[in-house]
Image (tube, rainbow over the protein chains, first blue to last red):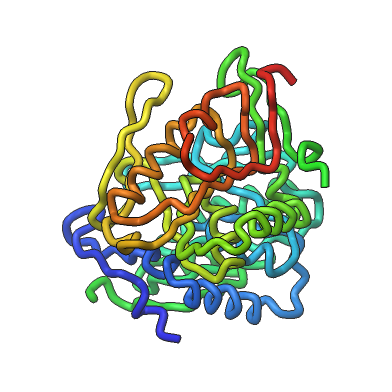
Length: 175
Length: 175
């Protein structure tokens, strides 16, 4: 299946000169969702995964589906101030300074192997911060699953040492 | 299955005097997720549903799962400024004034029957605004699915005339 055909490209979003890859058009396509989930599960085949963590908020859609197919629970990694119980936090770099990602303190148990899911790997900042959150709770990062990897950005390098799976690669900033 | 046993109650969140129902503990339980999805699908049985719309962001997790089980696409209804393509907006009342919910203009096709999904029905403000968004695009609201209904709040009344399904009911503000 040609996933690029269901990913919408939006020029100059969120600002001039940036080409944004919109996966809402993929999510609207039931077959494309299933393809993404099946390919991700195939890739995880044989690995022990105890839990799926989705990064707010597009990672929630895919993360929930992958957790269900694996028969494991789902935990959300959220932006600052969104989780109601006790949390731990990690900073990550945003364009205009640092921001926080949070995870419930009781979201991961000691030794659990956690698959981290998001729609897109770019600079790797939120992904790396998510891994730190899991590891601080005693969990082990089983790997990362993305739909898209922007391979002209340093995400893969930032996640060196981790297993990273993605289905669609964009190699340059231009369409 | 006793869903209340997997929903965490957090007193005085987000502010003094409010008892918050935290579904992250339910999402962490694979069996509970499946139970919620199966019961919702059972309830929808026989109805024509073409699309599932999930309300940001807890509605994304459950909405994605229900869409997949129904074999239909998923579209996100998001807070202001989060969707990258052309949107339509509806205001809804928040505690300190109005806010906006948005939907991509091409998210729903004329005549499509859309199931709207969120974790919790409280005052019904975001749910009603979501229905208006769907209807403005020519869609028909097939119904609403929630995990929780806070029946001491006016949500059900606000959604009068629509089919509303929920699995767990809390009848008073106190635990």
